[in-house]
Image (cartoon, rainbow, N blue to C red; front, side, top):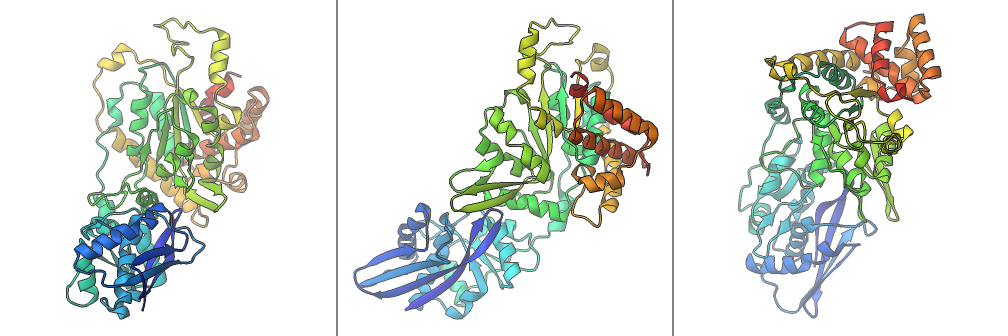
Length: 509
């Protein structure tokens, strides 16, 4: 007796169709699983046997079952194989109608009582079902809203194994869950953090505006308590709203990590991730024996905030260099390579010296010149080259703290940022990039033409400040963004001058 059921296996942020085959024959009662299963899949035979027995589908007489997960060379991970394994056994025993089984993808972890429990990756399974032209996906009810944001495929929720069997036999109607991704995006709550809550720091707010308008990386240098963290936490509020494609890209990553819930089926706001400086390189970039995405992928299409930048381990910071350029991170293991998305805005904060008070008029710096050099040398030149804006955030004066805040600052800046991004969207409509920060060298030459006065300013920057070729290119990108904020088609010397003012660490060399 033979039964077949479809499920899927996660490979990075994609899924590959897996066929679960079960052959039942006479002999000593046993259940074997082959096809490169991991320990969690091997243990499923215990869960499946108990779930079948407690659901009324007893294992009769002297029968043995051989279960094959095809393709055999693809590693199978997690508890999501429980439901398809149970259904393939019931199909082989003719308890489930076979004619329905090849129209669905099944997935879900089984409790010992047959209850269906959530598992990661439901959204990606729904996308695979749509791609393969299948009728739908049968999954635990807890994952249904997450998967239902994919249009063009039906999502059938179930809470128990017996419900799935009765549905396949036409004895029970499972109503598909319907969600509108567009409505979810529109209902995405706005941030309750406003830049008006940050007193003073007008120059830093301007830098945030420029960074948001062009998707540029930003480094803030200032003493403790100057507002660096407060400024960064309010940055997502002035970024443009997520597009549908961006929302789905970001939700994929959260789906495979199991970070979505019934109350949050779709990521509707740009993510903000702020890992602690003790994080490992695998935690930040991704990795593990069986690779999983790291913080930079969870920050995809959003903001990655690295507070106390020099305190991060050097190998962790250097691992950021390639993803900051390419927008992806590829993790290679003996079994193969997996690529995760990692297009993010990096915002970093640091003190000017180990004690934090260098240049502060109200505190005395106790650091020696050598200590300051050692502190700053923890951030390599190649990494600094990839940070477009480097600004100072001085301590706030009392009159700025005691003044009345101007409400609606975030709304005002977001309007300007949206206008600048719309210009960039039109500019890059024939390419696959979204902002000025992503321009290639060829696009910089085409869209960042400057006048003679600007050329002379850039020449002095390269010759006197030691700006590298990459730094020169990033200055031009920032100048292009500043001109976009003014709705100016050409880059003028004032735009280049402002862009050069955002290279604080270059000027100190």
